Amino acid sequence: MSTDLEQELQQLDNWLTPLIESLSAKERRVLAREVARDLRIANRERIKAQTNPDGTPFEPRKQLRGRSGAIRRKAMFTGLRTAKYLKIKTTADEAAVGFLGRVARIARVHHYGLRDRVEKGGPQHQYARRELIGITTKDADHIAESVLNHLSPPN
Image (cartoon, rainbow, N blue to C red):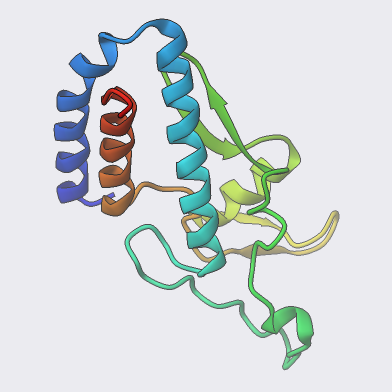
């Protein structure tokens, strides 16, 4: 994460914390669920567009021994970006978006660019780094807007 974005997120946190603390636990849970749902949608769309949070495109799949079948041409992570795997978890104090279960290992390997087995008992491969989950400047602005909308009285 870039230092500019980190600074912006810290400023957002410093600005939002007193506002959020004034809400009841139930209202904070509702707000956290809204923010997490919005972040899941934003991350899903980013994965669909095959881009990292910083806007750079995902590194394409490697062509293995000249194979260029239909699977190699399709977008990556079509299953991972579904709500079945891209889960939200909220409490009154936090909202989280991430992967759970077996797919969490697959997502972690790609997110950090780790080595893993291609298939059970098969050869190992060094995967390219493709950041699946992240917060962009646009997401941070959207969070601030969501909080303001939640705090403003209905017309």
